[in-house]
Length: 462
Image (cartoon, rainbow, N blue to C red; front, side):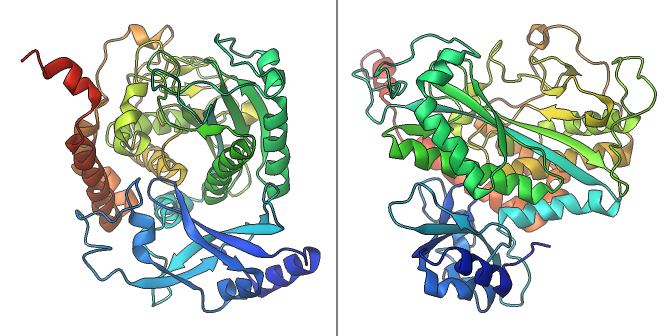
């Protein structure tokens, strides 16, 4: 259950920051886009008592912010309001704001006080419950890749990397892990890091990634699945807002450039028991992997492999998401698993015994972290509870293996998700149907738009 904002937390914050004028109440929708309202600080107490009223459909909008006619919420049910309360521990300053301002995550309750089904945080908590019932707690760290782009498109109509603030030049070469590239964008990256610190978003590693203007910032591991996802969505807000301040666009789009690396969301997961022991770790060495790993990790990997196709509609939520899955692209094209191998979908990173974990590499940075994590935890529990076998691990280049096992186009992914009993069970029947309806709506809207490429190929030739 989400811990709601308390009057004591409000009083403490107001005493420490008496000059703050407004507070942004943030609700992450199905797409992970923040919706909400801006309140005067005098109204902050509402978030602890009667709540701030918002339509339930706020969580269920499409990527353009419109109601979806394929679901019975919004336009079709009179769009009723429900109460939004603050999430305790998420009230923080907004360091990039022009005037003293704060923000807080919100969560919605039905009129009977139950969690609103469409809140992605509640979907995650529902999927988490079976592991909780086992006495297991996930420890999660999320890595997000993004591009810093020029707000103006190039002459060819394509996006282009942002000008480095000090050099006033654009990066043109890959230069992965380049310290010079970090230095060229030090002004904006430093402000991102400092803003994260002020807001309690625990980021610890910044890397120049595999394309000009692409970066990755890693978030610390957290033994609280919902808090880890809070950190991820708040991190994206920090990056976007600080980039805007520096006259850049921060893009978490899965594939902004056809010939450059896509943006991934890599989720690291281990499980600890009630004594704080990592149950993926073992005192003995596994003969196949050479690691001190417990058979539970192999069961978990098997469950993740078996459910990966079912959950692709979550890991890759929109049309552009599927452009990321290409051979030799550092995005997985099959369900291979392996040790210290970045060509696989499920990677066991090199670590000491206490930190044995699985890195799930399928999701794009455009996906909703709550839903991605919910699907991952569903797969892990499914594998452990059924004692599934993952099959042999990949010791070479997984891109050399035949493609297959994963839907790498939008419509097949939606069809697989629709017929998945596992996703239906772990996400909840109502949310499963609703999510499918939203994505069907977006897919239809996307398909109905005629792109310029159609005219190039067909206007005169057929």
